[in-house]
Length: 511
Image (cartoon, helix red, strand yellow):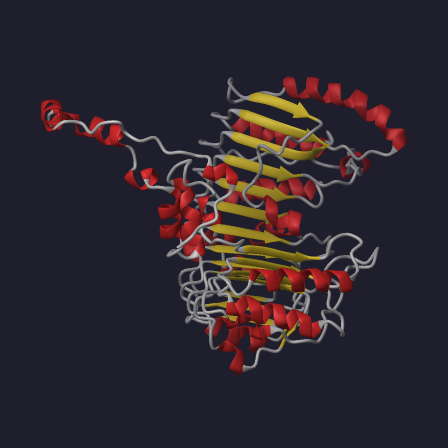
């Protein structure tokens, strides 16, 4: 087998020993020096020539070949060269490129490459009505080359100012793209999936499925899940036709479920016993049914709306028993649900004994919102909480200033944060309820190491001078607050360096 190595790799030479150690010297080292001899001998696999290591990688599926990069620096990125020709293709229209020129370029590329092993294929092209056959040929080519990771985005470019994800996808079924027996990761965007039964013959290896802006029915989704016995992760975003999402017990391998802005969905039934991650963003559903909510370790629940009341939903009862949750994100509406549940919430949210990270997404910061935060920490004990992130609202309106004469201050609860070490607040404006929240947290976190406050930046022109002076005033005010931890450092900054980010930051960024 002949391998074409890049120049940088071809120049790299492995050190070779000039002489073998003698048996006498080995015996004199003794058994006690076995660890030092192992270290001196280095990794024998790494000492192999590049061509042999690439030959070894050629027998591995893509995901296992990538994982070999953790063995040592010499293995890092080696998997990219395990085939003589590029095994990762990106078929995307360049800026200003005409569709005809793009089609010619892709055709020439595929003819030159031939039908060789293909790891990753990304297609981003809106075919319209004329170029559908070309896309089908590309997908057939990917299947013939045994593609493992396939990303197909046929979404039309959104006309400004229409928001992304609101246009209905074209009524065309490309689902026979799943013919590759090696396909383990599939992302499809912007078209219709009718999914007849004949298309489910070769989905047995699929592990990760992402459906974005897809027209798909409830029945078609159930057939897809039933045809994927190895499915570990399911991501549904902007699927406008879904109404009732059902994950049967046959999807026992499913560990991660993400649902983002599927507006017509009203019911969710999950019977997958292995589910560990549940992330939901959108209007709260009427009915949640999760058979194993106690096994969840990663939960994200968010509704960004400013609804006038609480919609009818059973989510507190359905996923309340989160005794094993480690990472949790809740929005203002979620906190309100818990507050309204009151004593019932104590039964459902008895003890977040394993919770390590909590993120609160506050759409508003009124007096009632502050009360909801207090109620959450009163009802839901978090003895292991280490990291707390709070996204404050971006509006400049301070509701406290309008009715400060008639408001009775809410007394903070007597709770203690025994392990809380890091707190971060974004969009801090110095409003009264924000200051009170800081006061509460500083006074209850006895082992706090740092409080990071990122101020709100987007002011009107006539407000810039006012708030630039307020920043120093706020720094002075925060320095006078009582701290339960004498070692806690308070850092106020105008620029978020992104080094300290919550686990779920990618969820609300993507939506």
